[in-house]
Image (cartoon, rainbow, N blue to C red):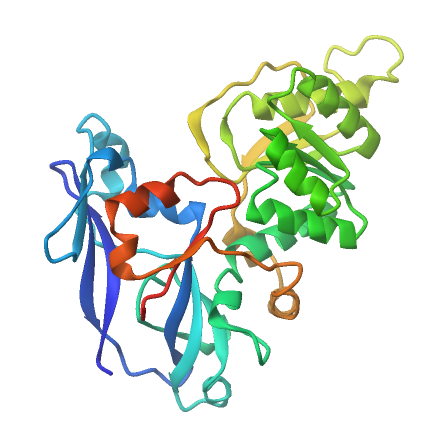
Length: 372
């Protein structure tokens, strides 16, 4: 085994996206490295922008030899993505498979034959060479499909709860809450007795969360949404939110409800609103429209971005190891992820299938098996 098929993405200065299947050399592992045969790599929402950027997928085509997917990018958008133009980039945040070769260190050799998960940014490949220390080692009986989503969603969920504690909050608000990640967050919060306010956009999503025991669910399509949101935030005392949507007024709605709750018992007038600290972290961009803020929530508030790798960088190695062990131990329960379909490389580049998984529908998640 000297070569590996791998997917790459490229947007040219002429305004053309190409996702290509290329043959790449597989290096000999260094003493601390292992070679993983990737058998399952999820297509997460966080993979979509690196893969497709702002391309018009309605005009996408697959080459006759089925090795290249291409789609046009409007030239007016190109200045906004200048930093990635004419770069050939690997894709696929995470994946899982079997260790088939290892360097001569004890740590690397100990992983031979084991199912591991990796987060390397280039997991849409038949084989990946990674440091042994960077792997989540799964328990015997865990399949690659079980382990495929070990990093992005599970560690994000655990990171949210840890961030809450580190910053002195006691309850959470979460948007797009019926997603796979949202359901995991519910399970963790229920297990750890953390109050969680879930924001969804349909009755169908309300039903999904009710079925797993969620207590506070607010439907943004309901006429009573803002009143429901205030009530839930007031009952839970939530002052920290994680928002996967990004655009629109949802961040403003959350902060407003937090302020209403925090100031309800105020005596007298305070020009700057309540002293209750209110924080929203935006960690996704399901809505690419601008975020609209109505500033109806005083002056004690904050909005920022939240990144998993930045959070993990704040922890000691042993703390990261504890979180990873929890993921491995609970990958078939708390962090279980159901997939709609397993795709080959060719299927993943078929325009009709791309439209399906790029829709990011709740309850639909796709998996690439590079060795299918």
